[in-house]
Amino acid sequence: MIRLSIPARQVVSKLTLPVLIAASFALLLVGKADTMLADRARVALLDSLAPVYVVLSQPLSRVRAAVNDVVSLWNIRADNAQLRAENDRLRQWQSTALALDAENRRLKAELHWVPDPATAYVTARVVADAGGIYAKAVLLAVGPNHFIRRGEIALDENGLVGRVTDVGARTARVLLITDLNSRIPVMLEQSRGRAILAGTNGPTPRLLYWSDGSPPRDGERVVTSAEADAFPAGLPIGTVHYSAANVPEVVPAANLDRLEMVRIFDYGLQAVVPPEAPRVSADRAR
Amino acid sequence: MPREDQFPGIRPRPSLGRRLDILARQSFPASTTILLMLLCGLPFGIADQATLLPSVTVGCVYFWSLFRPASLPPPVVFLIGLLLDLLGYLPIGVGVLTLLILHGVVLRARRSLTQQGFILVWLAQICVGIVAAGLIWTLTSLLDLQLMPAGPAAFQAMLTAALYPALAIVLTTAHRTLAAPERL
Image 1 (cartoon, rainbow over the protein chains, first blue to last red):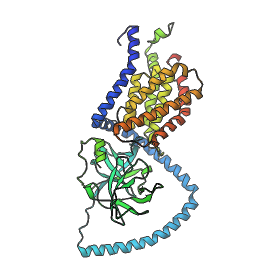
Image 2: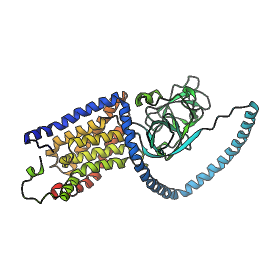
Image 3: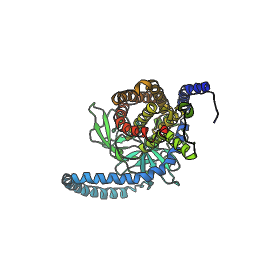
């Protein structure tokens, strides 16, 4: 270690903080000028942390499951009654669905309908929140030899979750549909009207730019639209709900607060950002 | 200033074990802060868990800047801020600047504040937490060129204040035992 005289040492110790504050301003500018730099550093850091998170997330999810078991034991009678009622209702729906399915097959056969190709998907475990305070995203642990690319679509068992925005060697980051920068072309299922679903960082994203003739109706189902070639048509997103301020919002079907597993679908769509586009502007362009 | 100048007198020979021990004690604040930050990323399944990371970080940096700044020099605060930016998905530099300003302010107020009781220290921490949350909100909004929702910032300030007593109990014990090189 270099031996400095006492006055010199005092000067150095006095100057460290101002110099570092100046350096952090420089860092702000560099980070703004080259967003890829921060993204790469982040992906590298998370790739190295992912194995630890994977190992630790399994006992954690077991603990959570045990807690849930206890809670559900407490509610078992009420749940049972509710499930019986729901089961009766769903049985009626099942027969309707079966009849409709048969009819649909028959009609498609008459029309020589070209079926959609089956899409490839992989299932990945959600290991960490990847949003921070001002973004909504999750981190997936994917094996070292994965084929996930940016722009692929994440779904859970109920509906659309979001899209892959960053891919590392062992991790992938999925930007949720509730994120402030998320914009998704959607279709209102009954009126077939188009709109844009814009995230607000809150639990319910808002609907924007619907056509004058077809305002979204309360309780209406919202699905993805194939416009802009970013999504396939018809993926379920949620249902319309008017907020207290009379703004149409969408209650997501996917369980975005407690994601554990998601499926990543590769629909082979090309209208996604090029792999080296800056993050903020790329997210905003969606 | 090296320790020999601060505390002149007779002391045991600085063997390797002793030096390692002193080093471990000196690096205790930084290493435990970083470890806590990494643990904040685990999927506990709590709603709004992302707020935990900045709150815990601000709490730890406040405590160690106040009670043991020799073990948390500005370059270490810089590194912790960088980690906060990377793990907390903040624009790069936001956490660094916030924590460095926090560190500087606490160092200024240190002489009078360490004489006070817990309640006053906590009140000061609440103010620091509000300023830190506001600073992160302002800088993020500026850098992203759009107004971020204010709810998460308010929640962060509240969580920072609420976590501090629990954090302070653990850290005070460590401050007097594990993190004290002068106890050797």
